[in-house]
Length: 526
Image (cartoon, rainbow, N blue to C red; front, top):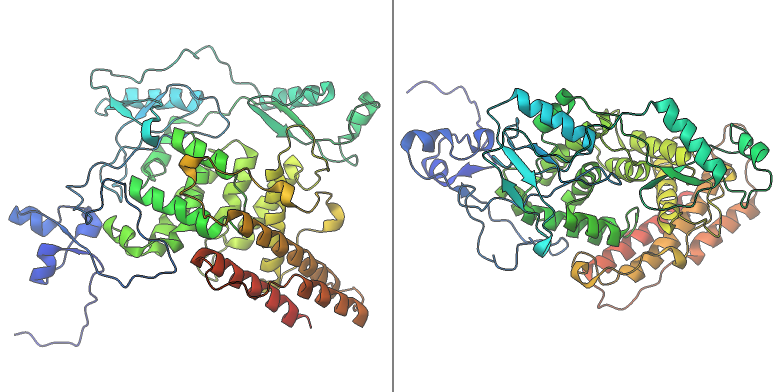
């Protein structure tokens, strides 16, 4: 026997049953099932799941109504539901995409159907012509039972497309000129229009006052036609596919992640409209960038066993993969709708790798602030103009909430001054309409109560922002004792007292979080 040098071997987190019983190295996390040992021995390769203590503070594993049995091996598991996705607010055609993913996907050889914009669809057609070995899938809007159907067309050599070959890409300067012209004509908001904000009167917006001195409103917010989308090159689409951006998790994991997001993350940061989100999700028309961002935020609150079944060692590993896919889509400029882009980068700011990460929460919240300025959601008026939704106010104050607590926690100056903003504080009129009955299982029952707690949290955040602005300016004067007592009394006035003991775990956890924010603010600046 060779002498031992005291080398310790670390046990693998995931192994198949055969390798686990033989105490040999398993390659299932690297190559997927079957592992190398089972392939050589020509025996079934079945995943061995680890038993974990159930935590009552997080959501249980979600499964389809008809499948309550234990998780099957990956070879026996039915193919995951494909979710057709598209760039939000883009026209939806019956388009086609390439069927085989270049990446060795974490979820096996799944071929997620993806709705592309017309320009992207033409590029996918060019790429498929150059790769004759690839199959072609035809994507249809089959929303029966909220599942998206995918039909395989083995005879077609190229994807079937609608007739849009005569479209000519409009130069960016023409898009900008058209937006200004529509703003001067004061077109009303209608379908498929995007926000346009030329800034305040200090900038080029003074032209509007010169050309339209008797205009009906002082607001510079307007809605213009969707500009022509700048095409992605075929190699860029191929790169996104190779990075796994079009390969979504299996349907049970998707359902668990979305339910966890609206139970644990949405209540204190309501940057999404639940009804719009669920409708787009069920129809397969949700932004890929937004979807990966939601998955990343929700991974912390989902049972570990769901990630083990899908070959992830931990929720943190899945969060890292989801963040990388979202960042790849962001870097490729895949999403064109700025409101969706703001929502996505705000959620991406909830991924924290380490202290040396230059793309941490501070970075992404800064991008959300900058993008918000470009469409003017910091300068909304009350009552809101036609087309401006309460969701915009909620987005802006969520960004402000995040900025205040990041600034206080990291000892950095705030990048938002309320002296330069006119968006009013949110109120009960900003709440979203209740979800349709078919979507109510995604959201907690106490959504209205949680929204009221969020309004109190925003009020405490506004007070904390004022404290940071007064106390932490280099050349500012020290606040008087009367100002300090006023701020402390206002914070204490928003304290939530003990409620009944039969609160649900979701409501109780949010109440404790709110008390922690309030107590910290009161103690830190006493």
